[in-house]
Length: 151
Ligand SMILES: [Zn+2]
Image 1 (cartoon, rainbow, N blue to C red):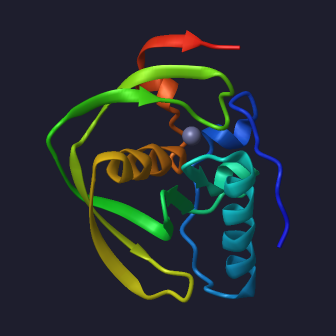
Image 2 (spheres, rainbow, N blue to C red):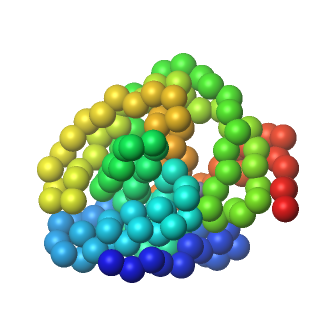
Image 3 (spheres, protein in one colour):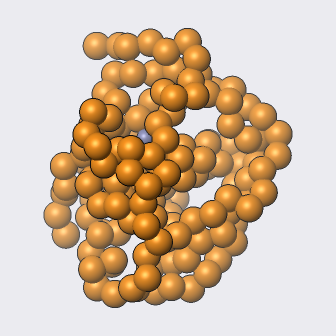
């Protein structure tokens, strides 16, 4: 396992459309392990593969004791609206308010290719939406209001 560099918003890979993962092999497992380690080190709540320079549809989520990983994620349902403050490891010090669904249903695969479906609410849903946006080259600041750059 290795910690990887987190790319910033000015680097082109943050605007890349990521590709579906087709091979559920040791490279994918290593990528996921590295993403967990990188996210732990950064003390963040979510990390998309293109934030470490890899154009693949993969993200990880850490919220309290939860450590989840999503390969080829698709949000299949969304309901409700919540406005809350967001930041991003690729936009250091930048915060803004973003409207997100209150609850989502997400379909994805795990690291061995098994499909699963999850209903997520609150912060989990917010993180999943933020990270799936990354995978199509979208940043929270594109849709945020009251943006504020802090130290
Ligand atoms: Zn982000």
